[in-house]
Length: 233
Image 1 (cartoon, rainbow, N blue to C red):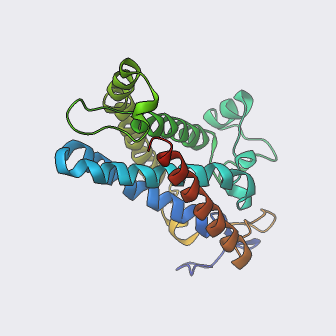
Image 2 (image 1 turned 60 degrees about the horizontal axis):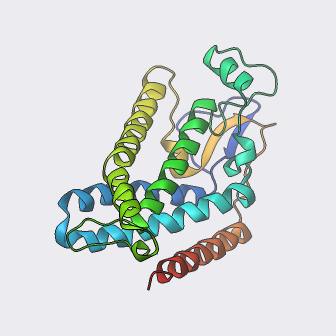
């Protein structure tokens, strides 16, 4: 639990919202995306690293998809899958009893998470078959037609890249907005894992066994990525 500079309000306590595996995933993905942009823009000798980092992102995405079913309470997809009615209530600021939008991902944050996961899946898939028509091809390039590979490459370097940058910028702007306008710190809890919340709010399991399970999942994810890459060998 984290220490706070102000007393905890009566009836509230520090609740573990983001388990350690989720936090490590978040920051590892952030660093990897920055590295991908840099290596992609440099090109040439940096492209082998672009692919290696891409494989890391592939493994991270597989991990997160699995962790969305077996991770801590607030990391599971079922805790932040919202319907249209929930989205409208959130946008209109008309929450009802049972709405815990302030704990994990709120409806807008949820949409951002699923959009990012979706576009990253497409980016990884197109990168695996890409062909820069110079000296670099993806490991699965030989499994697809030339026309498909070139179309995938165009998407990967163009629209796909643009969508990811847009989502990242919107994410940063949202963090600033919530900090400035709503006085909500979204960054701190992603480091500490905790939020000061009413005692009735359930916390996420974040014990040793959970972390061992996460380690097993990421190792298995890396193995899956290695197997997929070898398909083109």
